Length: 151
Image 1: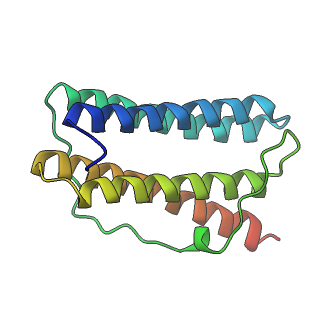
Image 2 (image 1 turned 60 degrees about the vertical axis):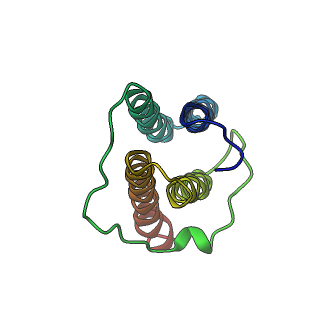
């Protein structure tokens, strides 16, 4: 946490990352021709907006608690290469981009949790890491079902 001088700076950084994710998924959705792809990407944006709101609540004193639930990791994101972002992306391409983003978000929150001395903030980052892991799992299952299985 040496790059940050206060808890507020850490939270502001995390909020800005969530804002970037919302903007990314919203922008990507606007480029899609297929309505169902647009909806899926806007759903991702909504989830990231929810994270931003939770971080604002933490700034106001609330603590998030991680669930005792262990999130499965299919590790598909470890083996797929994110496609370049373009208006003519396939659903498979959009899923690979989203999987990579969620993996990086998980890693960020896990790193913040691992280096955080404040136990309340540590639990908050662990909870957010868990949520990103759930998103990544949903995307990996979707990729497995719609891309790998149906080919």
